[in-house]
Image 1 (cartoon, helix red, strand yellow):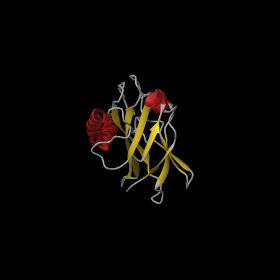
Image 2 (cartoon, rainbow, N blue to C red):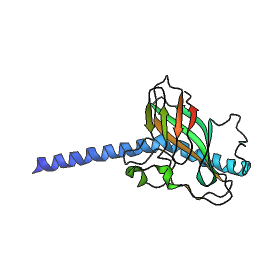
Image 3 (cartoon, rainbow, N blue to C red):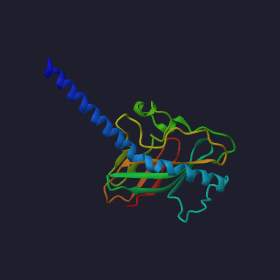
Image 4 (cartoon, rainbow, N blue to C red):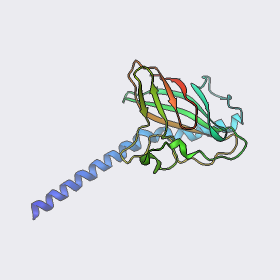
Length: 192
């Protein structure tokens, strides 16, 4: 009896240790950038009004500008290859329409695992035309997409910073096609 109890306790301790490690790892992966993005989006929405091309304080042009439903404009500002084998795509999602609008649920894609975590950009993909491969948004151990989630209703001219993480295409691939449901596809360059 005591050996069985010891084994159960040991398994429980290992499970707790692994779960804690995974939770800390997930928190460390995206927590730092998320806190900075709302500050950027708040200043972008205040300074740019409804002009989609104005990016005061930024010298570089967006990699792509994609117009979606209900007046939404997605500006992809950068796509960086990380040393850990990921590509992080950053951008600004702006309500360029004349009415308050909710971010469409279709942007989450149609996978049950992602949809159950609420509205996100989980439906985004990167397509490598050279190797003919499609890369989907990464997920954490609980199936949550590694992308911006929990969008508020956006007033006209208001914007929010967004990010999406994908597996990295081969280092030789520098251009990919970015796709998001209900938006046209756009070609972007990966740096790093």
